[in-house]
Length: 419
Image (tube, rainbow, N blue to C red; front, top):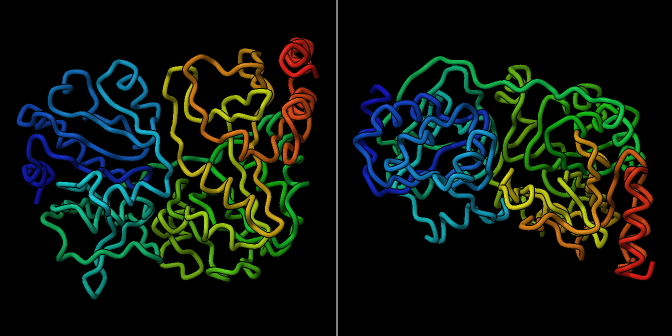
């Protein structure tokens, strides 16, 4: 049926899951927004959505209330103005919210591949939280796209589960690898020095992770168990740097819960038995992560204070992104045999303010606690905080802070820790 007819299955005062990232069902969201006057109090739950999030427009505030597990740029204003909400939650636990009935789903809007000969569609580029939604929502509505790759792993759903299917043939959103400047390249070289041959990697998306991947071309026998990956991983897979041969689970397989990149990446994962996209309740399970040898988790931060507290989802009181899987992988990597948990960030903001700070901004949320943090890396060096007291941590972090900020940070450390 048409998208406009399909969204008639949504009812006021219901909770609706929306698949995210490159699998955002844009046609269904746009139809939902067009029919907004017919709805009241519909709660939408989702991770980051690609596109302009039409249901979050101010004039539709009575119709829809977005409740985001990740606050992207298309929802930050709505959250700041009180028209949408942000829920801090570990990525590993979001599927449990649906499965355990904490957030029961009335409907789910999905973006899937055409069915195979057995009647199964694939959740494509985003299995993550979408699998639990597909298993538990009362009503499933799907945008069936000929250009959605068929990913292997957990993401198969039989067409008999769907109440409505909307056929389309439209390109997926694409995100080219982020360009890296001298700062990102310097950080990448320092991180590459921490990565051992045979390590299993988790990384995100952006200039620093892509630069790190480019710096690993001379490594050998690397594996991948990650919440997401982008095009930056492809050269390492094609050159045989990533072989997954030493992994203890899914040996020989690159494992993720979603991918986000260009058409080249989407074509690579299509029907590729060497890649598995799985439920993030599995991928981000600390007990699973810790089994991987030399698990090396590389995550980013907005600011880090002198005790090692990591802020990653907010700028002061303003919600900026999400808790995501950072803590899942930080803890899992730390517990892994010879594992390493790495927080990477430039020493300064684009405005020149230090990102190593004496005190966190008022209202900022701590994503990774000072008890969990291990390595902090900037372009100026590596601070290993493991086994260090507060005074020693402050000294180590000041040594990798922006040079212009060190005098002020040292004064703060002396006052607080007698460092």
